[in-house]
Image 1 (cartoon, protein in one colour):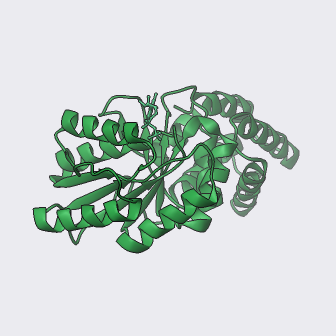
Image 2 (spheres, rainbow, N blue to C red):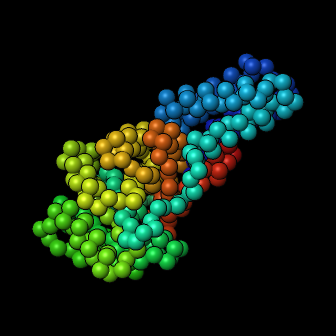
Length: 298
Ligand code: GDP
């Protein structure tokens, strides 16, 4: 994960670390290279610009030019700022607000983003690591195959799914899931909402209705981490209309562009809670800003 960003950034910063005293011109040249590295890693332009500005301001504030080890100082500032942007404020990675059972987690996102897989991965994690009793329900009334897929995954990981009743609307299924959760003593209800190939009004209206009915504690947007800039606009759209509490970036086992993570965080201000690292049910990790920033800098 993030190798592409990492290689380019360390290349850009290597030139600085070897040098003694630096001029301001040295620093701005290096930061230009950092900017190129960010853009090549698919960080959006405004985010890259904003990030460089933060680093510049931090560098001025810390009198980098006058210091004895200016190269290392810039590297440290770039690292610190990366962590700050990626981490946001006072959030624990992978932490979900799911006390007061039954707590609803609503999973949203476009079709193919990995939403159903992530729903099951997260259910397994909550069951195994936190001892939660989880009930999953698919609200994808237009795609019976998606409902079946969740049921199959549920059996595989030993997590209950709400029995499928054809003919119900998404809101009716969500209501039934909550009733079932209350009656059955479940801690968490996970709602796998329907996805579409693109964002449309009908999809958003349906998700809004489910949200209003179930008042979820967490609304997690699942986005394909390989879609770069598109991931960012998807996040903006869902957050604007539904209001998300966090994101899960999938396919981070893929070609390793870390730019989406940085952009999503900067643009939506919402935390990246988890990353998907493969198709297997265990391939879900909490998002570690420190670790990621460390990798970015190599
Ligand atoms: P949905 O339409 O959003 O519900 O997407 P699915 O959950 O059906 O996932 C679509 C495909 O992506 C499936 O083949 C999944 O196994 C795969 N997938 C999901 N998450 C990941 C991930 O983190 N890494 C990789 N490599 N594949 C994933």
